Image 1 (cartoon, rainbow, N blue to C red):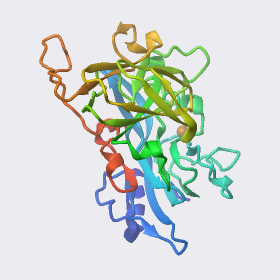
Image 2: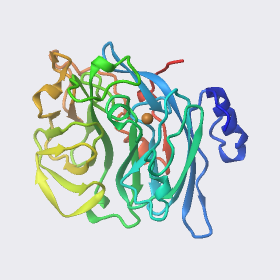
Image 3: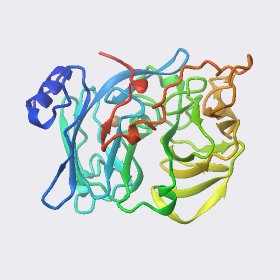
Length: 361
Ligand SMILES: [Cu+2]
């Protein structure tokens, strides 16, 4: 296949025209066709996404050279139904090979779509494209990430995003949920920030820690009201552990790696390991202002400076935020920081401008 430039890739998509009406601007780097129903009654989705060299900012002036899906970290949200047919064309606009592993998806009869270089496919070479086609099963909180040089590309180049598959028959606890939030935890070794193609080696010093690619105070509050029932989908998207503690509440761990537990487990802290997902249910029954943080102490630092990293706050409606010492009193609120608005939209691929970086050409 001939090498593609960024513009060629977009034009190629446009040539597929009828298929991708959403891709209307030359800067678009992710697109979806309208969902259709097949003769089997399954919904079917066609998506397209670029991989781009992109500089993202974790916090302050700490930037990172990433290989970003659709130019953002985390990558776009894929949200589909259980059993839907999914087709994703990936265009590699970077100078290194990549692939996508659909973590948690079974790939029954489609093992060639599992995204492991030199095992199920050749890595997608610079300028090339690859189309993944599979059935979205099982239901639950899944994710996707590059599987080429995972130690670098996932650990420190931001190649990961959420893949949410709605259950055909929701569980009783799922029917109670009023708000759905995605929180992806990762860690970064700043020594490699500007050295693409290197990094992810034993002995790396991870000195920045993020929720959805941002360190406190660049994270966002969760604004709730009494009576809300939140589903927080926690992802271990990097190579480290994160011990997530929520003040003032007992939550229920209800799903592990997308699958419902026989009975929810009550807890106030949950340890999220690399690759794991826990869905926890938080009943908002204690109005106030409450911290959420990683209990691994140095994960709440930015470099050598406290406080930062994996920290945020739950703010209840009606609790005044005007105390002069409350630094977040006038914070500009970004409602889709945890994809909570995107998750309410119809099924599809959902990009998020908050996570967009700056293209590196
Ligand atoms: Cu990669």
